[in-house]
Image 1 (cartoon, rainbow, N blue to C red):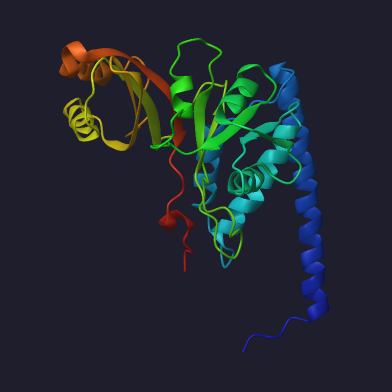
Image 2 (cartoon, rainbow, N blue to C red; image 1 turned 90 degrees about the horizontal axis):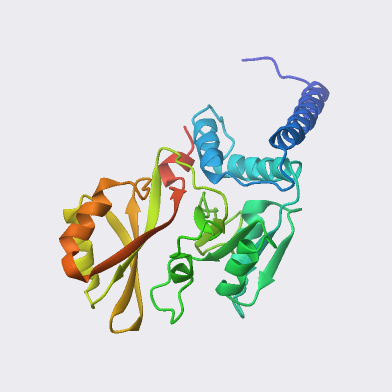
Length: 290
């Protein structure tokens, strides 16, 4: 039988580890500040694609008995604290009367100190980001029933139009950690979406005639896309907008978009790539190793 380690000695080891962790966190924060100074920008810029890559790599490391969900929570606070060192950063959230799930989701992702404010509508969130009043905005996930869906306001080619950068939660919270965050949301910002290696993209297609969602999915598949969620909106019989989520990181130069336009023929008007996001962590990625 292994000799029993005295309790005082174990506590001393924990104290030593705590001091080392503290020193490393301070050092990391100082480097983050230098990164902001090197960029020469007055504002901090969120990079969800890079954060996704870092988290996926870290979760591949041995974690012993420590829950990976807890690991993600710790790293989310570290990311938020580091971002704050690079300049002002503020989040605006679409208010949902009688439901604070989006606000809880924002707080869960952006940490305890990040300024988070609510706006009365999705359009006001988009405007706040577009005008530089907020660094990023959090909107509800792709809405299939709204009379004025937020995604249609992103289907513009102006360089200052926000784009989808991330989908939250990146890691589904365990019930014991955060029972309120049972909702998905989309982060929008003016930064350029970054490829993470496992991504999904959001596209908006403008047509001059009504087409069923199933027919749109068939056209997408014929062009080589793997489609997920879809939504539709129209303001007159000659202008129909279809939003759809597809696998992979898609840019305007993707040949499949040209093939899709050819498949649709005369009813095709235009398309917009309104953003992309790193696929959230799977249950397998969050499972314990033992």
